[in-house]
Length: 54
Image 1 (spheres, one colour):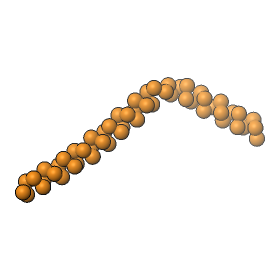
Image 2 (cartoon, helix red, strand yellow):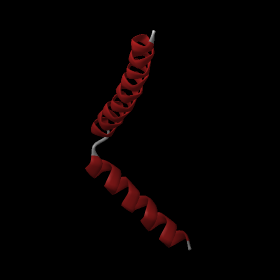
Image 3 (cartoon, helix red, strand yellow):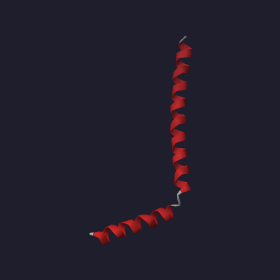
Image 4 (cartoon, one colour):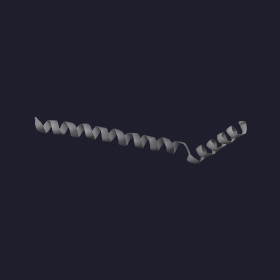
């Protein structure tokens, strides 16, 4: 019984680690789909428009 309990926590730890790794992988893929340079250009244009509106 004690060995099963130890394995239980190993499984829980493995699931948590897998979830964290999955989130980081999906996040990196999301950033790849949006070109960073295009994001920066859009951001600078919006900031210029905000400055002109003031």
